[in-house]
Image (tube, rainbow, N blue to C red; front, side, top):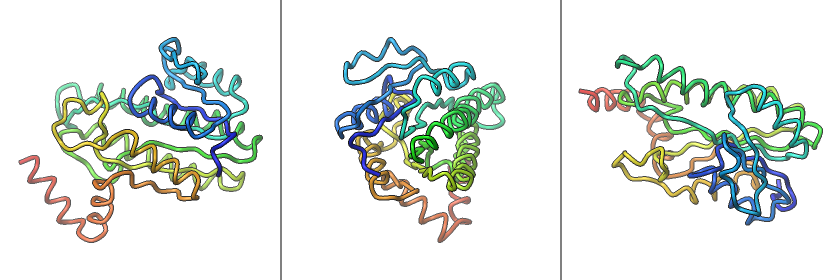
Length: 238
């Protein structure tokens, strides 16, 4: 799909990766970019159209779909991470919140905008996932669980929406250099690289985006030595 002249909506667009997506689509010639955030007043760039959207609030999701009836491309970027092991104190509350945003929020926007995309010729949905959609890091297990579930939502939406001509793209990356990963000392990928590879997939027809070297390494390792990879996670925890 060409991006020039298209209408895009990006969730979680007030900062980090979401802002990078919104800026890149505007620069790429999109006719309109809806920049959605829980507080749309924080979006001050005049090239963007601010939208109040908390993806965990059904009434706001429905209102956004009603208002933004011209959308061709939906970027499900909004997310939250609490960095909790599965059996740690407070893990249930952490995972419930991560599930509400990362899974149920993504599902809600897909369900609300699928009819919009169908009316507009099919369009594209991009779900920002993670390398931990494929495995579990013990120190961040509740977030991993939410991304596993978000991958299942993504895979099924691709199947169900194919008939209406809607493509569903999964974006996988390691740590991205945003506020979410600010406390993590591991190497990080720039938001701009993730965005560039996503836009290339939209233009080129790919449904899988391996947005950095970490994603490529994990993708390959889980196919060549899944047992060894799992043992590595055990050693990490031990």
